[in-house]
Amino acid sequence: MAAQFGRRLRRGATTTAVAAVAVAALAASQGPGAVLASDGGGTGGDQPAAGSTSSDDPAATGNSPYYTDLPPLVSPNKPGTSTNLPITGSAQSGIPASVLAAYKKAERSLADTDAACRLPWQLLAAIGKVESGQARGGRVDANGTTFSPILGPVLNGQGFAMIKDTDNGAYDGDSTHDRAVGPMQFIPSTWATWGQDGNDDGRKDPNNIYDAALAAGRYLCAGSRDLAVAADLDRAVLSYNHSNEYLRTVRSWFDYYKRGTHEVPDGSGVVPPPLGGGTDPSPNPGTSPTPTPTPPPKPDLKGPSKPSTPSTPSKPGGGSTSPEPAPKPNPAQTLGAVENAGTGKLTATAGGAFAERIKVRAKNSLGGPLAKVSVTFTIAGDTDARFEGGKSSVTLATGADGTVTAPVLHAGEKTGRFTVRAIATGRSLPAVPYTATVTARQADAIARTGDKALTAAPGAEFADTVAVKATYRGAVASGVAVTATMITDGDTPVENDKGPYFKDADGNTVRTLTDLKTGADGTLTLPKIYADDTTGTYRLRLTTEGGATVVIELDVEAPAA
Image 1 (cartoon, one colour):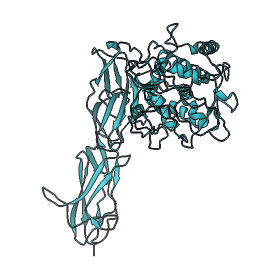
Image 2: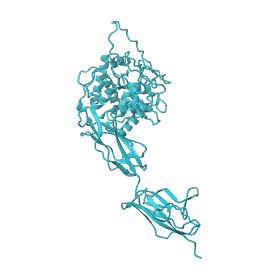
Image 3: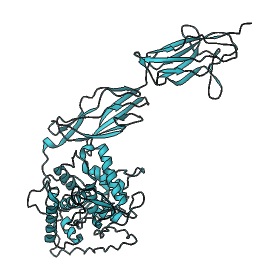
Image 4: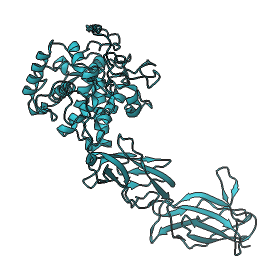
């Protein structure tokens, strides 16, 4: 389907022969970067390429049509020069400001969460170009949402794949069949799995360029791909659309954008014609795109024939609608399971680091180790614990032995249990859960810092304050919880109902204080202590988290005559 539809949409190349010459000329002019790692020599435009994702791997766009226009043969800038060019250059090298910002933001986000993927923003730009013409020339609002939905044709099996409705029309407005949606052309079922909140507004909207760009980036990085490797990049693009013609088109724009781009105002980018069967929002003021009409399909004069099985939707972008043979999976390269690789007990004191690190093992279908499997570790639950660098989620790839170890986990100040889940990124395998426990800071000793007698007259306040210091194994114990209680004498003391007391925030009498903590130097100074009218010797007990205790005497006596 892609080749047939592409000829209808291509501008400046009216025949397949001309298009082929253009692609060849572009590849020749741009050097080795345009060579397809999956080329086997002599493959046709819509033949499956070596290393392509099998057809049972859902495509993001449901194989909707895409723009096959090729970039100019003259690069926007010479190789090796800066891509931060001023607002000059050819119209084709201009990318609308919000769209460009979304691609670069997605690249930064993936660099933080899946650094092993090495996603270049120019790849997102190339896919955004062929899928929607950079959000129809950058027609987005201040938040990056298109002014009107960008919808692909109805996927009803008539010229395209047959995909029955999966979202009750929530995204595409069609409750009978699905349609590709938004600047990166995700079908609703794919968006349900891969949708992201790229602009941090609390929503996952396929019509928002920030959300769609981040989702596309994560989709391309699935399966532990390293996009700096030509073969992995080809596989990623082919997973978006199972067509060599699509791969060549995206590759051409990718190489073109790598050689230089410039930013243009939103809404002033090149506006492509509407895709056949899709929805074309009204043009921006000042633009005059000329849509190319889509001719109706020719009637079949040979009579009804046996219906063909529509291709399983692949990734966003479009491609051939005819089913392609799926290569037999190699059991040694097929992920079979992800399991705990011998992680020990996860415990730490508040504010400290967990001595044990979470370790995962990926196994192939034969039970052997599997390398380069992308694993995402995510902290869940009511906790402020974080991985090294303050991250709550990190993505890493397994090594040659099939294992991968998460970064050091640091406990926060919240005590209790929480869970860390490890999951094969983008796979349907169950997560591997790990229970972690944060205990309160402890002290095994506490002592008064002074030795001056503490006395007060009846009805007066004690002139001297009480200060103590807590330690743990001889070291300063900071942030340790302490309870102070006025207690009775005897073998089983309880809170005293007379004698010295504290005051709460409202000035009321209290004889037990909680929520006290030692400072950074392990010391704690108690609030003022007051005496009632009863004379005598009283006891103040301070107890730490960890069981350390000290008892201090308080004397209430009348002044000498």
